[in-house]
Image (cartoon, rainbow, N blue to C red):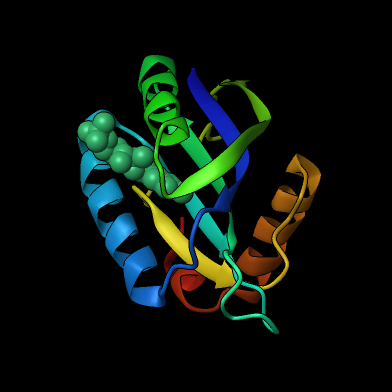
Length: 140
Ligand SMILES: Cc1cc2nc3c(=O)[nH]c(=O)nc-3n(C[C@H](O)[C@H](O)[C@H](O)COP(=O)(O)O)c2cc1C
């Protein structure tokens, strides 16, 4: 059984691509030690580059590790208004792998319109998988 969590938050200041990349590289090193995988989406306002962006992050792994990470993330001053959109256990069976991103200890993508719900996030993942571009081509 693994545990999954999806949240939304608002950046306190705009992040450059390099800052997002640095956050994800450090996160993925820590996540690898804790059995966590997932995806971080950073939303940028296309027409207002100075406006702070927003995040949507999907986290999956052992329940205690996911809960511990989520409470550290909630306290991070780089964002605010952290709101959980969905969370819960997912059974791993031979036909249904529990993780959406078994090979990504954390990946990121920058986009304009962030998904606002679990259904929207799942639709986005399906679309990216079938398009199979960039990191999605190699995603399990
Ligand atoms: C949007 C966002 C996503 C983050 N995602 C992760 C993550 O997946 N893994 C992680 O270890 N830290 C992540 N962090 C960083 C944590 O909030 C925290 O800084 C880090 O885990 C170090 O915690 P510590 O300072 O309590 O040791 C994220 C931070 C932000 C703002």
